Length: 440
Ligand SMILES: *[C@@H]1O[C@H](CO)[C@@H](O)[C@H](O)[C@H]1NC(C)=O
Ligand SMILES: *[C@@H]1O[C@H](CO)[C@@H](O)[C@H](O)[C@H]1NC(C)=O
Ligand SMILES: *[C@@H]1O[C@H](CO)[C@@H](O)[C@H](O)[C@H]1NC(C)=O
Ligand SMILES: *[C@@H]1O[C@H](CO)[C@@H](O)[C@H](O)[C@H]1NC(C)=O
Image (cartoon, rainbow, N blue to C red; front, side):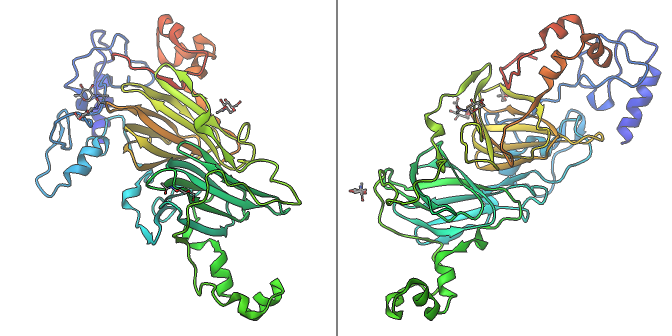
């Protein structure tokens, strides 16, 4: 706040000069002069480019220093974390105030270890702002089974590695069995019983990202077949299925959750069903669909328009090349749960009320962008940034800042931003989604 006061005073003192725009004291290492005069209404924004100060390729001691601000840490340091979070340690001067935490590395989630695999999760306990979605990272060794179960939320998944066979039966007794691989999806509506099993098509079995449409969800509180029967009188079980008691001698006395099994045939099909198969398949082979090529990368969208059954979760999968950027945009009414698959990213979230905060993400990190928050996702590394934007919605929807300005009367835009006709002509009436690298 004091620096803002100085900034405003400087602006007032220099408002009669034409040579240079006022610059914040914090930006005094920048020698770039603005061509425009200070506005009569408010001072001009700083000319400081405010770029990241180190990235994954830079060999630099990461310290909280930006220009003349800050100083190196004299006390204890966690250097690997400092290297991964340049904008937490040395925020751009455009950041102001703070928003609730929107970064959670899966590496900090406690693992639930089972014979056959593992699971770890992120829900509102880890990131309280993320009330609309929760995520689970699950690994199954070849043949291992995530047991037959159901839950109140829907379940959506993106396969990260290997092949998984899923089974389900819906409320009308229509069944489904299907097998999906890396980059493919599945979806089960709320309450529909299902199972997951890794095939042996790859040596490691499978690993996948599960999304649930409620941030309060916990994978520790699902309704499991074995847990239910272990808590039902044997006499009731026998009567229910019309058998003697002995038929149920060997059922587990507690839940299995994840357990080893024989690898199923990848081509397995559902048992014959007098009711027929579910009308809309519970899997979607997104890996077999072509991506839309963009100036700075590529995009795949999978929502209820093509993955018909997926009415509560929608996906936009992005590839952003080095130097490229997912453009400035927002999602009108949809929260975004973000998962980073490769590369490293810089994201500033604008929360209105002069509040904006910048975060950095690498592979394995989870991000979150509340509905309506303005943001961008910049590739700040030397490899392709591959990440997922996941929405608690039937549709992927976004508003592009570039397209908005391009389609607004130019005089109106010029009056706000004092930009030239040339810059106006450069705006894009077609949504760019991902822009390429530009020398700035
Ligand atoms: C990225 O930079 C790292 C560190 O300098 C290097 O090891 C790696 O090979 C680079 N990757 C690419 C794709 O250039
Ligand atoms: C994988 O499982 C199939 C079907 O059970 C089996 O025929 C095959 O031998 C297995 N392959 C490997 C590499 O274990
Ligand atoms: C799914 O449908 C949307 C809307 O028509 C389209 O933009 C997208 O490209 C489709 N996705 C795939 C993978 O075909
Ligand atoms: C990473 O930092 C190096 C050194 O500052 C710079 O040359 C390179 O352009 C940066 N890479 C990206 C993608 O910003």
